[in-house]
Image (cartoon, rainbow, N blue to C red):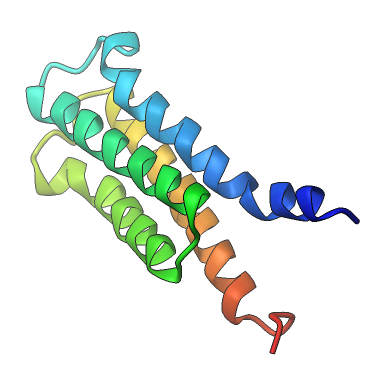
Length: 120
């Protein structure tokens, strides 16, 4: 397998995080049923942070970026209750689902780094 192909296979989760971060950032404009401004601001800020971490990971990979993505994901899942907008509708579910996907991909990357099949 070529080096470019291996790099692409290894980086697909970072590309997915970049897309998810961009989606999260624009989602308050697309999913316009959020009556609470905190839900929209949370989506803007977390979308930008997730996308920025993904760009950094694409440029030069470091394990701490995966841990940061995991923290972002935990916040996205918890934030509707922490910020008091758990009844805001579709935007809340969007943030929870994006958080779960980002978190699972971060855990997957960390498993690839530290798991049984990781290079010695």
